[in-house]
Amino acid sequence: MFAAIEAFLPEAVAWRRDFHAHPELSFAEHRTGARVVELLRSFGCDVVETGWSGTGVVAVIEGRGPGRRIGLRADMDALPISEASGVAFASEAPGVMHACGHDGHTAMLLAAAKYLAATRAFAGQAVLIFQPGEEAGGGARAMIAEGFLTRYPLDEVYALHNMPGLAVGAYATRPGPIMAAADMFSIEISGRGGHAAQPHLALDPVMIAGHVLVALQTVVSRNVDPLKPAVLSVSTVVSAGSGACVIPARVVLTGTVRSFDLAVQDLLEDRLRAVVLGIAAAHGGVATVDYLRDAPATVNDAVCAGYALDVAWGLSGAVDGDVAPMMVSEDFSEFLNLVPGAFMFVGNGEGPLLHHPAYAFNDAGLPFGAAWLAGMVEARG
Image 1 (cartoon, rainbow, N blue to C red):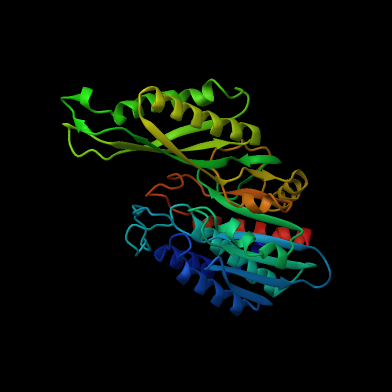
Image 2 (image 1 turned 135 degrees about the vertical axis):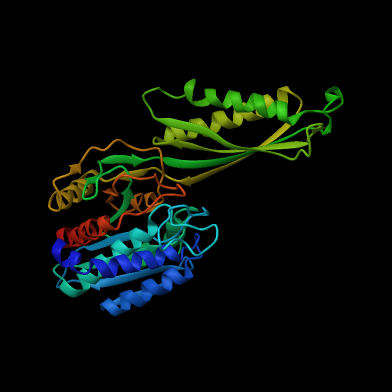
């Protein structure tokens, strides 16, 4: 199988580099989706559907007889980042870049589709999911809300992500939690603007925001069991002020909360709200908290993780079956909440990390991702 996929690696590299040069943001993957449809139809897939969550594409490849319906998912969207990778096929879209390798994931699934459609050495059905909107969040949730799992009730579902720092040809996953839930918050603190030289006549929201920012660092350290992972980060501080001598009327703080355990997730939200509202009130200000639970924790089914590792071992001698859980998030978790399955990391070699302007997907990893995806269908169909 690996050799068969590697034989058309130049085609897959060309697809990937074309996607890279023409990145599209979440839910705007029109060109990408159209090219995916064109290729899937050329491969002879039995069903090719468009329009899932606007730009998503779903294809079905029939096996040689009755069997399981196995889902394979790739994400298609890019990030609002200006590229600094220096590659010859760099983004032609100003301020938009495939800085997370979704162009590579799409090419991997296309390569798997080409192989599976040509060989059909499996039972059941392969259902290929080219998902929009992973970076902005909500793409998987939107497809499910539109009835994807009703139309295609999957028996199992699998996905992957490239990983800088992991050697090309290496694989890593684990049973149970592998990535955290991602919550986002926005805190607006309102006071009363005035002259910075007369603070007694104003109600300073910057000062209140400072107290809030420091106190939020105790939400994890003084409320969560130290043996349960959790992160709370304030990422931006935005003031409506206009100069050094002006006390603004409002300040906005935004950030993220990460956790694995639902009880910890509930605790973190409750304590964040209590700390913010209490400190604002104590200083005479008013605060509002907008708290969004974006993607749930990504939790691999233990049995399916075993299947995923078996396929990986058949392709490589470098397999980590107990990789440490990560505090990053993935909306593939929405599928795993409803269907048994597993998420696999595939090596991208050394280089800048994901979401960095200089990040570069390593095309040498394409056949390893494609072969693992196809292998999951052949092993589990």
